[in-house]
Image (cartoon, rainbow, N blue to C red; front, side, top):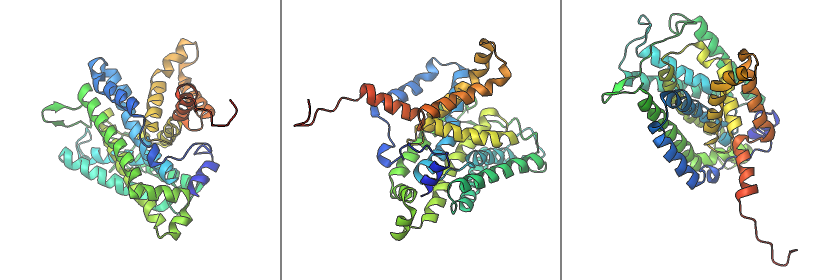
Length: 358
């Protein structure tokens, strides 16, 4: 069905296990250790680590998580998720406040955020409605075409999107007397919404809707024969994924304080796909792992290239090689590597069967 077409097209690894509700939650000891580390990180982490590494990781991870939900649970590979996030970011700048006072409307921050999320969700849902009746490479091409059209529209439109320059000085609001753009508050803000997005995906995957969506992924014709509206389920999946991407888009524009056409260009669109696949499409934690690897490579690749005497301008080569090696040795990304290592070294050996060879 749809997931098989995606695998044969080379986007979803052929040997990657399809995620199920039972495989959504990680091992509980690892979960508690990770939660403790993230909670106490501001006690010893610098502002650079909190904002540029982990804050950026949480935002990209949320966008990749929306793609993982569509690809992993629905068998639909969408390249429009970064565009949905970019749309939300633009709406925050347009309806809220920015340095481009002649375009920004100056609405209260909470109203601008709500309107931005609603518009971006509608945009993502409409994109899904246009693509859910296709499969495999055709879905990829339709969503890529929508992403490209949005990029060129924002690039060439100056009356609404301010063209190439975009918007800058988009301020994070001060609520309860807290400057949420400060390192520690913004870190906890992004962590909070990343956890909410993760738990929402886990909950939905275990709900009747999520189980039906996984059924349409595995065998759409059988689900139709059972009376399920496959198209409606897929469009609803796009709507849910778009909400996650839209919230990440609000955090995205607050993180950098600006947004421009390049924020949601073709390059970032493909980067989100790379993050999701390299982290692992079998569990919701995978996109965040891929996002952390991506951020580390993007941040330190230039220094590594210069340290070994190579041209620092080619740091993208190191980023590409890093992700290529991950996917080459593990079709299910880093999660696949971890599962194989766990089975080989940590899993207890099965006792020999009675009557078998000893």
